[in-house]
Amino acid sequence: MFVNERRIKIMELLDRKTSVTVSELMKLFGVSIETVRRDLEYLENQQVLRRVHGGAVSNQKMKHFANLESRMSENRELKRQLAGIAIRFIRENDTIALDTGSTAMELVPLLKENFRRLTVITNSPEVFGALSDAEGFELIQIGGQYLREEKAFYGHMALDAVKRLHFSKAFVFPSAVSLRHGVGVFVHELFDIQRAYIQQADEVFMLADSSKFEISAAIRLCDLSPSHTIITDRELPEDVYALYKKNAINIINE
Image 1 (spheres, helix red, strand yellow):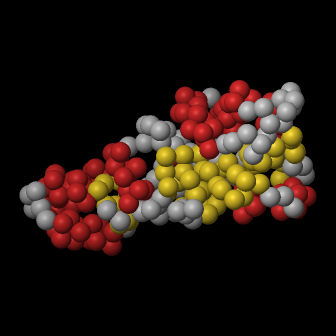
Image 2: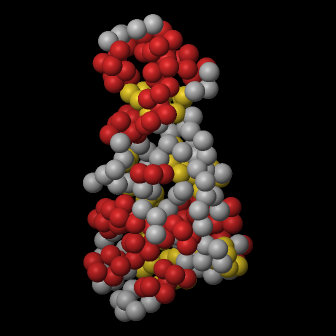
Image 3: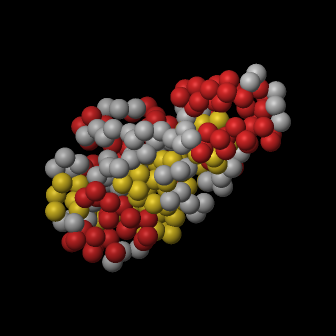
């Protein structure tokens, strides 16, 4: 296979699956690791892809934003998988912070089913309301300006309240996760609150279903960090999972 044919094939693969591994390309083309690296370097210079440890990821276009009402019914089964994994990291008597959004509402019933005593901090009145009948739970509602489209509180008053608190674990629900662009969100009003959750927690868990990987969002919330735990579902392609592991990202999908 000629050089140009290989590189076209690599671009076609990235159009379909957003990431490739060096070992996969070596096997596919029957070439050396040096040849694959030269191909990836060339395509990176053409801004087709970005090289990462063990392979490359596509320069994907930005994900489009859907409102909360639409997101509530989107990928519900995958979000339930995330919630089922996340619950394993919570302990009786923990103090946790819960971000807003559709994934949060999948986690709420599992909290009620599995725990008798928790302290839950949230800027979501939806989460607060759903937990209000859990008698052993201590609830702290973060208040402030109300963003109707996202059913969440934000602003300086909300941010000041979060910064006065400390919690063992924060559960944040981003819009996009990418090796190149980090963790992304769309709603700029909620950005400061989400950042504060990350900063005030001993442990940070990012819950993102597989549809949110290797895409970018309008606002960069934070870099991917080995100190954070990324929770996703079993639909995440194995090659993407492998790339994240090779880049020292703590990612869990089972």
